[in-house]
Length: 176
Ligand SMILES: CC(C)(COP(=O)(O)OP(=O)(O)OC[C@H]1O[C@@H](n2cnc3c(N)ncnc32)[C@H](O)[C@@H]1OP(=O)(O)O)[C@@H](O)C(=O)NCCC(=O)NCCS
Image (cartoon, rainbow, N blue to C red):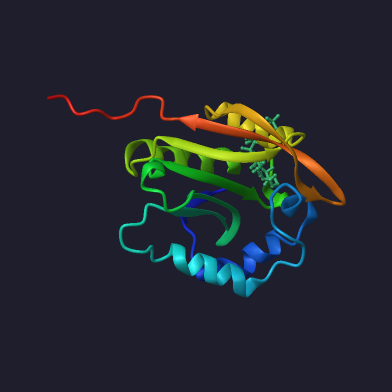
């Protein structure tokens, strides 16, 4: 399998909507069934080209010309004092899970965060029983920070999530 990573774009929307129509994929996220290709096209149009000054980044993992995974770093809001924080989301199509695609996406996003994009803290939430995702995050330096009870409705049940975060392991400094 030859995997390439690049910035996701609006023309990926059809493949991404298809990926998110799988309950095994959207069930692990906060997305709803019956994804809209048009909504994904709008979201991804904002990612490519990026708005001037934005450090938001959504990467597509591409195999044989087809996007099979999506992972992004997103701003957490407009507060100036939280500009060092981004939130992370990731999904891989079921057909390509367990083959290192998630690992490659995480490695690329964290290199961007640590060495280029002025990001010091990355946050996420993950369903408490999503062991594959939790293991992926732990391998990449994320630690659990707490548990939100009945955080989201998932397949008819209010389900807890873990809050996880990763602090920059070695923030760049200026030697005077
Ligand atoms: C969670 C998710 C993103 C992980 O992506 P992935 O591409 O399957 O992740 P990887 O392949 O890098 O790692 C998964 C497993 O495959 C193993 N693996 C990695 N490369 C491999 C390879 N080349 N061959 C075989 N196994 C491999 C990893 O060791 C890992 O094993 P583990 O589950 O025992 O820890 C994916 O399962 C997913 O999209 N799930 C649904 C949506 C979701 O839950 N997203 C997270 C929301 S918080």
